[in-house]
Image (cartoon, rainbow over all chains, first blue to last red; front, side, top):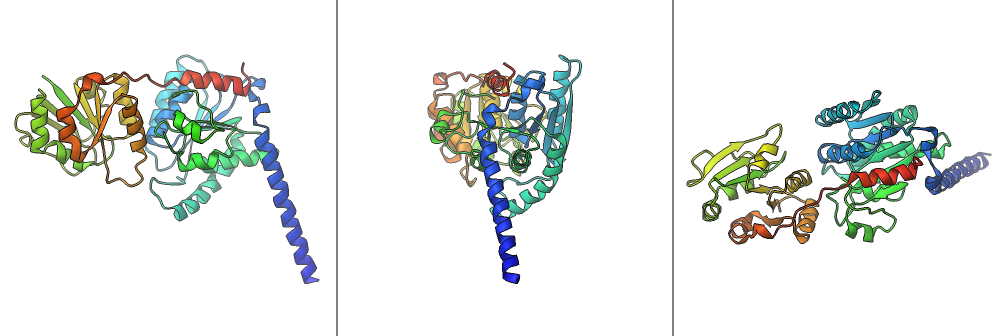
Length: 218
Length: 164
């Protein structure tokens, strides 16, 4: 009796995992068909890391038209400088448009520079707890990030929306300009999951053939 | 007046400040005709006093809201390898010498400096080769650096999400 119940649970768990993986594969394959602009505007979740990452991601956002709206910025809660940079940028954007829409959200930092692997896993899980409800509430059409550790839990949440069939979220990753020969840790992970993965140096594109190289873009 | 501006960004890079104020480097700078040395020392613990560089006018500060003016008025900029600092200086067209902090583990910023030197946009060295580099460098061979083009990214994304 006990043994058969155990087998039942095991089979159930196996089925759920298989279903999950099947959905994951399906979702990963449908990136090119996903055209959120058909409804008129594209809601973007922007992962601003800290320092140089924020500067780069703001340069990318500066090039996108006002049709990319609303814009939701997520910053790590230990980051002091990014909020100021974002507000300055959005204020300059507002001049050219009547209805600028943006919000800023904070989540726990998933990894400090040079933090060890094992403790990074724990702090990323902690950041995941905050990222899930945030991303499920905002339901962005796309997530834009360029490398800070904070992008992992947010992209995971975006991917989960797709797996559960709630919303296909496009993951757009732009590797930081300082990466010439090797990807960052976030890049190595998201290379397998991002719908559009940009690198800014040719040697890196040669190593990662699935990546997109259209020159330096920040 | 010929000015050298040194920036370490938000880091501390005491070794660079020590090297710069060493007799050998000061002599090299004077020989090259430099008259003024401006040091931005960030979080460093070494703050040289005004008399530590005989023959050069010295100005030292930790941080400023913006160092754009210092870069503008300099004849050459010596910087740590931070991507932000490097790109800011290259954007202004000023000659740039990057000094690598070889005490940093897993120093991926070296990648960027190496590539930019290979492309002829800057020179790089370490603290121990700084004096020699200053003596031998030829800044006139450096090539201008084109800024990145985010508009290409925008064009790509417009197509990808279906705006065009």
